[in-house]
Length: 265
Image (cartoon, rainbow, N blue to C red; front, top):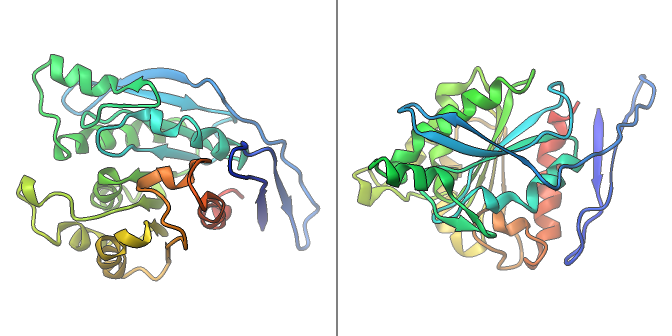
């Protein structure tokens, strides 16, 4: 069994991580690495639209890989701070631009711009095909099943995709999921219904004020291998809960680290 330790504080980057084995096997240490400047690539979505992604591939394809999807009106820039920390925990990562988004951390959403130029829709539901194509792309970059990670609207859409990609996805992390699709014609319990049959381990987290939106989705998951973390501080929406500037980010990181630890063996 491998354990991971993160040394982090508000205003300071994650500075170290250690992995070790225990039991009858001898101790094995893995040197943590990170990618501060990701490689930007494109691949085709289901309708041929180019999807832009940042690759944080600190390790070989033998390492587990996390696919990172952003929140509404943002971009892959949501993960500039988070992805290198995931590297230090022993994971490769890929952050994508879905066509429903805009800009974050001075990173424009290139997929959104391409969709607008092509006259294609940019609603939350239009982005499903981008995430599906990203799952297929990421799966080719790892020898293991990938881990899917969503933020806000993408964390809800993830539940609809995990079921149909059980051969590719090992686990799912949903940051601030909710029923965000009623105005797009979906039932008020669409995501809860989709989440019911998810079989992979699931981690859900939200701000305390968002628990009324996330709890019904979490409760609907019949799989017992699930975790719901609610920080004691007000925190922030989506993956921003992990930003160093967010109060209580250390507790959120500890919860994420605890969930991910089993997948880095």
